[in-house]
Length: 165
Image (cartoon, rainbow, N blue to C red; front, side, top):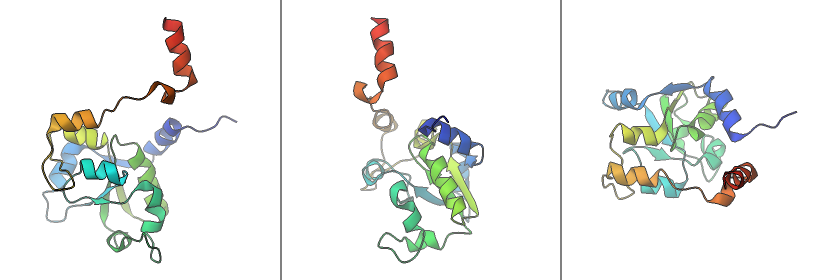
């Protein structure tokens, strides 16, 4: 049996997950009943650049944040099971996994931001830092595209690099 990978998990769940494009989300945010924005990135990522008004619940504590009785409980999120929620991450992959989890936990209308905050930034929609200051889109672009260290690329990448020499 072949093991699942991050990419295969995301690909399988993308077919089951409703997604929203950045321009459609931007329009929804101007309505009388905007969706809840749930950013599931790590706290340092969230502090660096976020959509104004989003709440941050890292994916690692999502399951306990959506139930009462835990130190990590987020009451606003627990009570939003019937509210439209758009899950955010950097590229739209982690948000697919988190949206799946929320649906399993009884949330009725959960969407993932397709293309993530990268696409939001590409569409030149506002992002701010933890102090609420608007971020420069070019600066955010660099922040959202960190280089991957060679040792993190895995053995297959190293073999390809050696063959190319």
